[in-house]
Length: 231
Image (cartoon, rainbow, N blue to C red; front, side, top):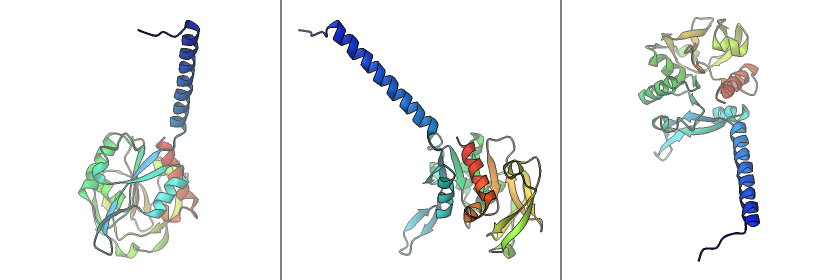
């Protein structure tokens, strides 16, 4: 025998269900709107002291993302495609050797117009994707600070609004030539930044803004602009 709710009770029940459903949907919408962007930082590989394979993200890079309003997560280059809908932007870290899997991941990210920041080796991988070549410059390894000249009408100039700034050096290779837009060079003609035009955000930096984040306003501006581009 079927049981039916009285009309008044049924009406009250349904009204309240709808009311709470609407509240939950609104709460979820506000949560999504205010959610911090998730930034996928591509792991680097190494071996532990006990010869176990490990993946790592530089702490100062992760910290810079968090301080700029993003949520950093470490991912492998093989996970990029599967996490494309979860991550709002990507960062390719510095390192020692170019990884072809990084370059293939970069291609997918740029084709889908996802914001990407490429640092040091990451910039060299970005240049390589666009038929770039590299060469050795051992005199720049731990050279300290040096001046770079920024070209107007570039993304980097739009971010910093400066024609010259001081940056740090921590690399022994550099981009010799590339089909990308070169947005800054050093006083000794080293390519310091490159850009993929007409994209949401695709910027390569030869220096390490994450290492001087707390003391350098221009580093903070770069990360802040990147995180905002990921929203």
